[in-house]
Amino acid sequence: MDLFSHIIDYKKNILSHDGMVNYYGKLISSQQAYHYFNRLLENVEWKNDEAIIYGKRIITKRKVAWYGEKPFEYTYSNTTKLALPWISELLELKELIEQKTGETFNSCLLNLYHTGSEGMAWHSDAEKDLKKNGAIASLSFGAERKFAFKHKTTKEKRTLVLENGSLLIMKGTTQTNWLHRLPPTKMISTPRINLTFRTIIEK
Image 1 (cartoon, one colour):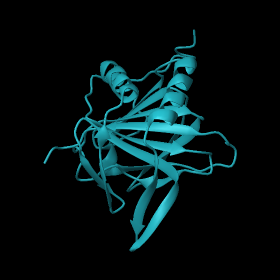
Image 2: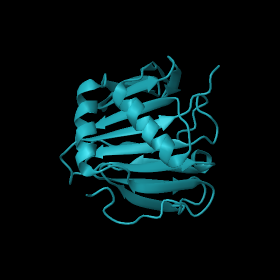
Image 3: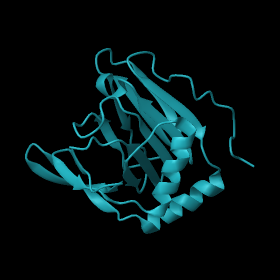
């Protein structure tokens, strides 16, 4: 049984200050993770992401999807998305994460990276739609990828590798004080699905 390949202290803060990030390692076994990967790949309504940068509309290779318990609006990169109703796979994973962490979530933004060449630039998830200082749970399936944090003022960096089936929690003032990114790499040719469970503030 490979539920945990090694012992990880999930209570340890990966950041040195000004925020809280906990890495739980593999929350589920590799076999279960690939099972969910395939179900999500097939059942999620994936679409290429859009962003408006300096007035120009950009279509990304990366695909995304936005789900929630209500048709929440979520605006980032100058575009607004309307949440789709939960599917069973997301509800199962949400319940698992909530039981493990004691946090609660009402929405989920999903990303599909087809290869390592697709990544995410430095950013913070501090949009006005999100609960301020609320927890964000990042669940990874598929290819292992490096994930990085950079302090907005000191430029201090922290990096770790997100494993297949692993859980990362960002909370407290992390989004206020730190940026994070998924660096692109030519070393990885297989896909990764990332789920970020969030809490939208109802208007």
